[in-house]
Image 1 (spheres, rainbow, N blue to C red):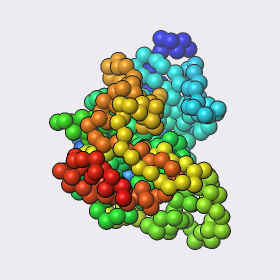
Image 2 (image 1 turned 135 degrees about the horizontal axis):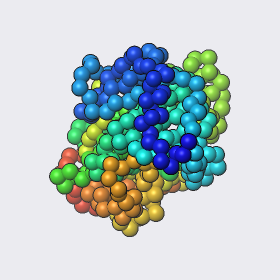
Image 3 (image 1 turned 180 degrees about the vertical axis):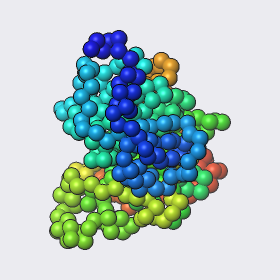
Image 4 (image 1 turned 90 degrees about the horizontal axis):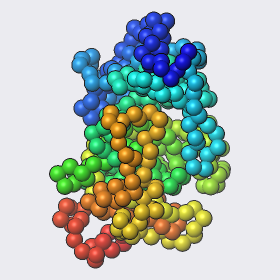
Length: 376
């Protein structure tokens, strides 16, 4: 087949003919409704459990996603390997662009995803790889917001009493861990684990999140009283015998269901963005943790920690230029930005974050002396 001229719709129609869908799930994320049609209830049941706080009754929807359980799909297209990210060597995805959409194949699992102008379609061993289906749905939500002019940020986010704070950092810095420590404070709401979308509205930066649960290692769980029960009791003793450094490097991960561990209603998907904390600390540094306010326009290399490419799953509705560091800096000048350096100290950083969130609007915009008072 000449894939240079093939349209994407015949692939979708052929798969649908072979694998009819009889199960549906409706989800609502920040006012945007999704219908997930699936070939087996194992998919809709699994997604309903994962997105338990966002399941809604059947009704009109804006985004349709179809998920088919099938053997690895062998579509007659010529894939191109997607280059691995910085510091990575293994190719995880390959893609093929056709008139009307893009086909993406996960190399390890054989899952195939089709993204068209109004089509979000997944086929393959979906039940065994439900996490990739979750990410697919989150990508559909992300695409809708990016088409509305939001910038994508690699950050976690929390909200408290009408104020919001984002937390960024280079890989392994602990932004999700810090956000979960802050969640231990009554009244704080969780906005997003690893992606935020940012925009200026009425002169104030706002952020939207994705309903992606944090995934943590045993070290994070055992060092947070609210999360220790995630680790099965028969494994807890073994992990406790390890050093903090050994626990930190373990590959084992656990999903954190926010409502289960912190109480109902503690997860939201939008809020103001009054500040950004960039974790630039180091586990090798033995010095004291230090937090200082910075000018994002004078710290462009540091902004690499929050700049994030949407990846293969985003096909803009209209051609756009990839945002530059200057675009991110321009947005961030509307909020306060802090750099965290020195040794890793989650207790200290948590106190700082909550004091910032607990400030009144008037107190947040005053003098340098007040800035110093926050850190003490």
